Length: 115
Image (spheres, rainbow, N blue to C red):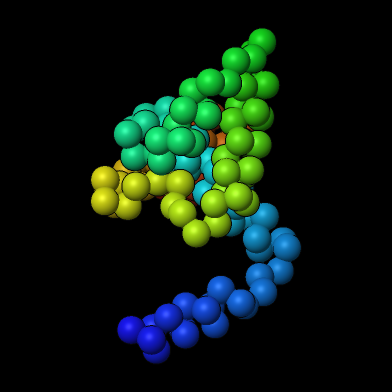
């Protein structure tokens, strides 16, 4: 176990460039917000309460506030998962991926499917 802990520390100490980090964070935040909207029991209870408390004039503003809450939560709880891994299933992530849409409303890569 000690060897595994050392390996974990080595991985944690690796530096990820800021561009990669922002791309990862963007995807994680979208997934957590999707879970909150579709399978809220998977989201950590304290984060779920925080996200549920958001009140805004319009949906875009509410989404922005929720994104900020998730980012702040992850920054202050870096060792705690924002989702319950015992409840989350692979199918949840697959459903999230299938729900993604481009700005024009089409599924990513849908033009490739028709060829």
